[in-house]
Image: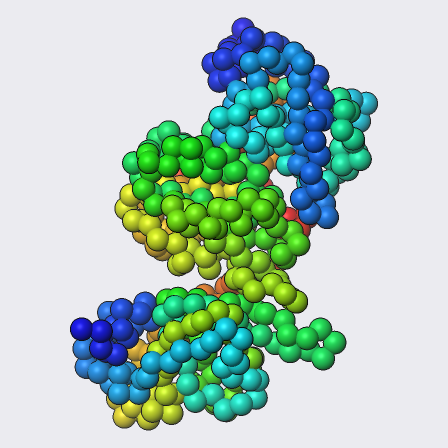
Length: 153
Length: 289
């Protein structure tokens, strides 16, 4: 049966999580759907959620007055959007927008933070997984900065 | 005599001296991006066409200006069409960009090793290209699509700097619509109307479906991009012996005599440009090379 816990367990972010943690995560989770073009959050807003993308594609954008919206990266199926829910002051640093119809599992950040404070093993497990994503994104950003396709490379 | 056999063995053409360019004429010139263009060449002399294997390169000579090594980017099953995609970065290639339909070029080749297209039959294929690195991989795509039944899942992952730097745009769109090919494109930087993926090419690997234990990966692009792609493929479970890359160095003679393209104990023009990654992994770590 396609329960929310099953859907959550299938997502790479939750792979290998113990059953009890899956249940805890599920208690903070909900299914969401975004139509193409829908703004999911804006820079400076409170970051109370993060999203495990199941289908579709989301853009993480930065807005500059002279240049408009610039896409920093896209986040697709099997990936995770947002970690500002984990780091004070819990505010989004970027905008996020759906590029196409997208389905995701939304996790309530406040709920997760409370559970992580109560159970530090869960907190550590979540931190390890988010740190892995941060490491991958930082690494990718460095490669983007290198401009590897320039002639000098 | 050995040099003669290079051409005889690999192309089945009438043997010619590999240092003597054959005259070809520009039949068509297609501008790909602001600095990249594709030449389609024809020859009155090569009646059997130009036979090559995916991954090989030619030495292309603009008379009176100079000669440059260029990967063959056409279809190996269409020997009547000799196709090169060229990035205008130096004196010779910039002068080539100014050439017109009907102008003559000299061609020596084909030279070098090829992608393991035949050996990969029955397996999944992951083709990862960065920037102009798609040009030497395009013949692979043509060949495997012509024998699609022979392969498992096929994914083509392509990364460029911006949407404007994308090669073969129409072809990529066509390939993207096929149900038997996973074609994913990403750009490092985007603005305006681009609604596709943004991020480095390694981020596309998670979008591809393949059986990591039965996959052959072929990678071509800037060395740093290939290095990080290999790392990511390993993380996804692809064994090093199933990963191939195409190297680029300063090829001059193209037959392993002059030493300009020496890479440790190998010559890129002769043992390469396509190498099993495992075979040159240690050399890539030597910064002085």
